[in-house]
Image (cartoon, rainbow, N blue to C red):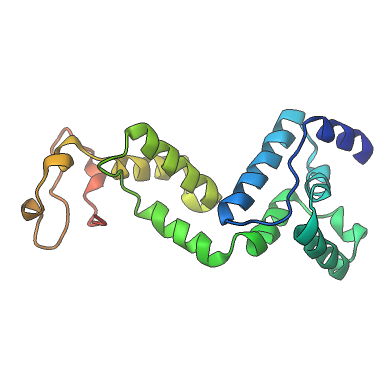
Length: 185
């Protein structure tokens, strides 16, 4: 029952959510909820109700009005977590910010001051924001490898670039998918 799940949920000390001062706050809160649901082995039917139980202030006011407009508790028990996340992100993670992160993900490059570990963390954070839009595991791996800085890029001079701005063709030791015509330096 919901009461059993609520008791287990509260033992995990879930964070409340009132508002997002930055879109990353919304993503972090959802990730926190999902981590708790995973460790509890929570049934899908209860996830949305448990998540919204932790709403406070502005978030709670929005949710109460939205839920009422949709049909109240009878509607709420039908809302899958994936659908709830879409609603939640539309309000607390604006589409313009989602698009900005999508562009950053698709043009991501390791900076000259970034270690490969730091780059990987930034890459995974962006992929996490995008969810399915980040592509399959294989597509994500290709994008990650393409964004990694090659050792010769650190010392490469701008005048060694081709006129079109494309990167030089990779050598046999370098990854072949790096040269697909993008240059966002």
